[in-house]
Image (cartoon, rainbow, N blue to C red; front, side, top):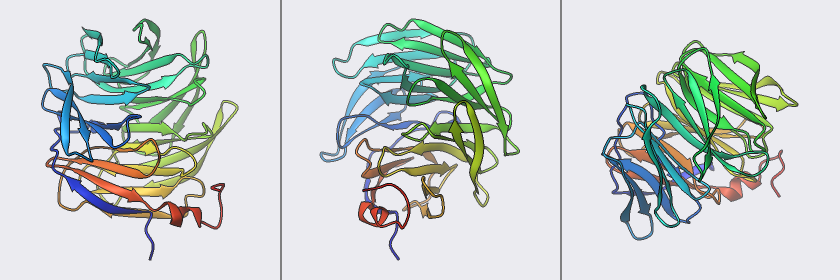
Length: 317
């Protein structure tokens, strides 16, 4: 039977995990064949074709979170450290402690006007939004609980975030930030969230192994899909670029799941080539590969595009 993804190769590029719950430490940028990961107190750019690593950040601390987007890299630490650099010239744009608590996630997006923005979530119950490269703080969103992850919609008008409660929070972003929805479909803390490339759906993954997907329309949302792992917590959730439209979510260790992000009726559970904690996962920009970080390497999976194009429903041409 055809599979959504197939193992291509295991790269001997160890990755490290600082926090037992925070597992979003693998990212893909725009450079083909390059995967960004963390190892001890560094952020590395790993060239999958050559098998070589280049240091892009020397942090001086083991990061709890790291992400790449729009030509920039950001990493955060357990003592509120935040480091941001320009990947094009290596310039360090920001290096400071932003409060007195733990940074849980860093994600990039673009505002409605096209400005690159960096979202930083923290245990102090706030989401801080910065403009990049200026690193001017634009908004501080105060939430009811410590926040573990936040993601900006593709059009920059809404933000979804999850934290130390079963709730998924939806905010409208403008001159001010207004909460417009609160959704609960799990029983434990939220660990990760993301939007699909069209901005018509968002997903959240929780500590109790639940993955939920909501359809979003004009500021409101309703549940359209719900999945549950057998025993492990969900750690990260990512949506591929269009037109592949795959949804990926990782477990705490050993396994990840891939789902058709249009109909949600086709899915695949993938067991890693050997037992390992998972440090993170990402789709490449072209939507042809998935990279999953392990303690002793990075597993590369090829997406079966021909099989996906043959799905009986959907919009892939």
